[in-house]
Image (cartoon, rainbow, N blue to C red; front, side, top):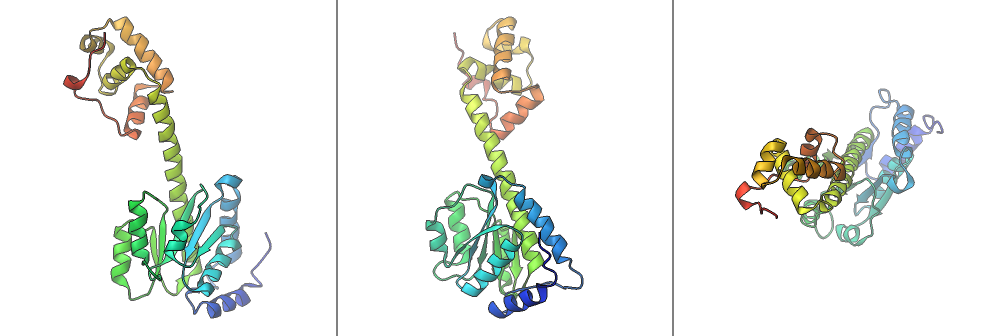
Length: 262
């Protein structure tokens, strides 16, 4: 990666002048910019092309959008910019780890309105807000509603990068867990009704002999069903099966509600 340390003062001056000091460098004497960019750049480059992180930026000020985009691309993060929340909501978004950087004050619906609408629509992109220094009420509301961070203007560039990487990592973990859960649902659908009954009792902690008595089966038959469901669910142990049930948000049904199959 090219050494940009010599270019930093000029870049910093251009950025702060172009965006009315909405985004400013941190203490240059204390911050190793080259090391920072290499660290974030490795994180971005480590992803496959279809999983390369994307940062969405919403701000009505073109200069601010350009400054944030320039900062993100300096660490090899892809950035897509929008002027309004409506423009963002109508755009096609890649299925990759992502986050959204938005001003709390937007034309039309505000940043907080957008946060509410995203939640209602089941869109779980992590949000980072940029707010005025004296806008404490908005910052508190945003954090209570689940924002990753609220950065007050003028924003330190390093704080922006840290917040973005935290948000992207949060979204990556969510996507990984969702992929795991979807796989578990697919495996669970392959179970027969009897195997699901046995699984209910196994997760509840019953032994084979107890399950056999509950379902009016022989212990050998219970062992066969248990072995099959463990293979279909790719569970190596009862503890693993319980963890899968927890991920599925699935709990044993009340015994009286369980049908007894012939």
